[in-house]
Image 1 (cartoon, rainbow, N blue to C red):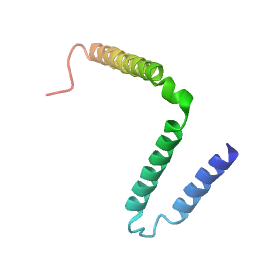
Image 2: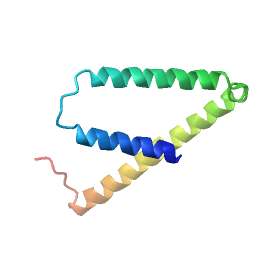
Image 3: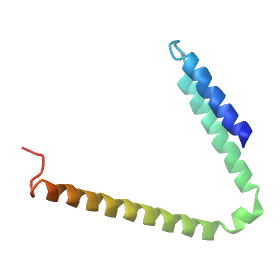
Image 4: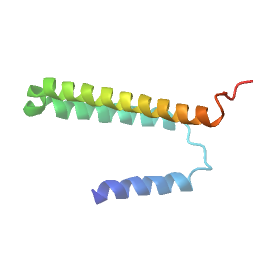
Length: 95
């Protein structure tokens, strides 16, 4: 865990020190590395028999968590909107 945090902090330090220099092609390198990481993650998950066997259960749990998070966000946004709208005396900011 400390290795991961140390690598992340050292990358931030190097990026901070090199922020004024042009880094041509850095976006393509980052994209390629992300693709490689995703491939390796998929390879690791696909090779794990327990994950593959419980994929139906995990998928249903993921859908339920996602729907709950979206509904909670919508309710919180609606509540905040109604509070702010009432403070302005029923008028919006549009003119």
